[in-house]
Image (cartoon, rainbow, N blue to C red; front, side, top):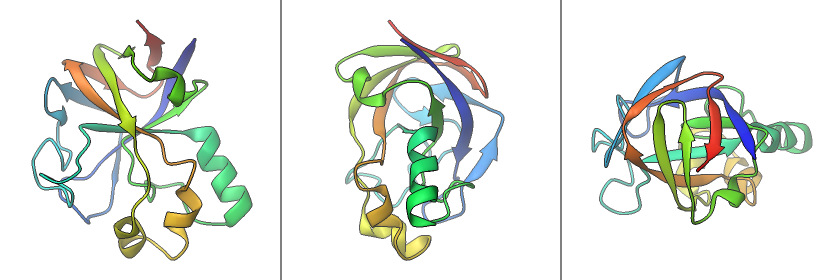
Length: 151
């Protein structure tokens, strides 16, 4: 099963707007270069952090269509927007994204904090569609349109 990276987002600090980038360096044991959790400045740092978060573009389209909640510009607070791969199928597996190797960590449920910095209804909209956490096992460059392949 293969998918691809559709968009990439990072935020240099917790609570600030996500920034769309066309490529990012994944750093083993850290996360994405320039992102809040690799920089240890995220809201959940030291409590419940994820090195990399992934969410399916198909789920974001469903959220937008069924709720009207804005999720087009990183409001979902996830790093990698994927297409064509069932993220739950990655459970217990390592997978290559561009030049990096990631490993499934756990589901990433939405929290009330996300709604406090985005818009009313965001937490509810993401329930059941909020993506996963992954760890960076091997550093490497990740770019828009890179393939995601289970190893």
